[in-house]
Length: 173
Length: 426
Image 1 (tube, one colour):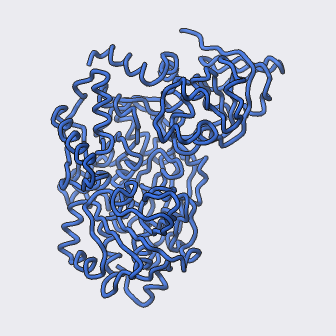
Image 2 (spheres, rainbow over the protein chains, first blue to last red):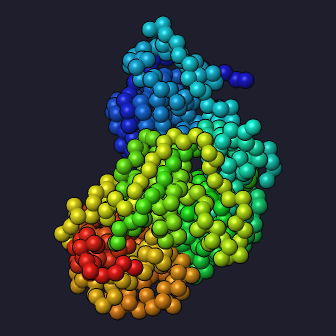
Image 3 (spheres, one colour):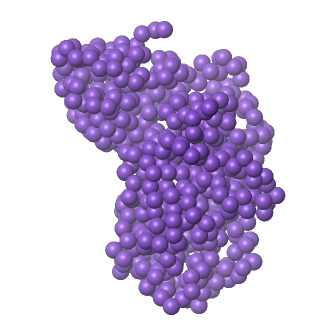
């Protein structure tokens, strides 16, 4: 099985981060924008306007409880996909887990207590297939519940559309 | 020996073809797939884009024109035509065009198309309405395309919040009042991604059609679905339609619930959702005196016979206030016909209310009967987000059909118990 391991500095945010506003300006949801190159520039700018310029592919975003809450618009999670980062959250709202998988975001969605396991800037290593989280700056290790294989497969192939095409090729509809 | 299961786990076990429990990711096969008018044409274009020219089990698919049955723009007429063409192209088994069914969250239960124990996948957030009859309705968005092209899509089996009802509602208090109180009381983080399951002796004191209001509301705070555990009234309803009342899905003793909560219906006062969220709920009296210009009774949370009867009792011999325009949307064509037979339409007409085509009515984004900027609406719709009825700066209050009717007559929000003091309840 292909590995899905991210290693880099982490960016820690709090509870109740919203889809609209925090993760993505609402106008992109209203406009049904799905182009990653457009959404990348605005990803998470409600939390930190400079973030898209500072964050690097392979970095890790750590969120608190009820991450991606509010109207389940997918644009915020497409923005995170566009940044090329991995995501660990304490809990995620109904609909937003589907959106994360469909956007092709590597995610550990049920990491109770992870907010206190790192501070912004710590270097962490996360294996999305096994759920093992290492804070290399602190020298600590935790194990969280990984996504089941069938959802990891969707993430790995790049999200909903790529997965739809794969299913189509398999059944030959 | 198998572990005790919730109603949800039982339904999904059957749909998945194996025993499943909460938290598992499964690929259950739906017994029915429902797509509504506003998305059907987009879905068909999407399938075209991928080169999918046939759908799996079209006999189990329903297309319904209910969000905009009365096309008032050229675009809407074109969209209706496309839905018709696609229904024909794919051989859709259950196509309910303009004038044929009414609200797709209500009539399939009325006519026995949705039955206890069924797993229904739909492109619409309010499909948990089918819980009224003991079916599990689960909303999907773009992935409804997977269901049509491949027959299924993944689902995480929800945990269950169990709500047990006792007692009897006071006169002029309805199931809608209770449902609004419930979502204000529950912690959204606990309810998130659960099925809210209703049972208990209090259910038998409510009109059977009030079960739609119970199942409609929990999703507003993040529930995945809602269901009334089938009981004697469910059996009675099924038998009266010549349908089987055996093998009804009921949670086993000892089934695992994430939360169990008891309510005395007798302790519930009329409730109102204040702008801007459906769970921003307070007793009606806290908003009394607020002037209103727009009143509406309908939507998948309301617009059933028990609602229309309550409205008729209020409007009988009274007039809608000169400052108010009132819209009444019977949920389905069967309900419209029954309201005609009972003389309710005459009462509505004489009171100065407007009866609209069965379906969603103004609640579908205010395409018909919207509000003007700055106006105040009181209605039985599902949501009161800014812009739900058109302009973003209008204020929307949500309440029971009885409370809406009283406000329409008074021209301001009033507690129906005070306004109707001395009159018999519907």
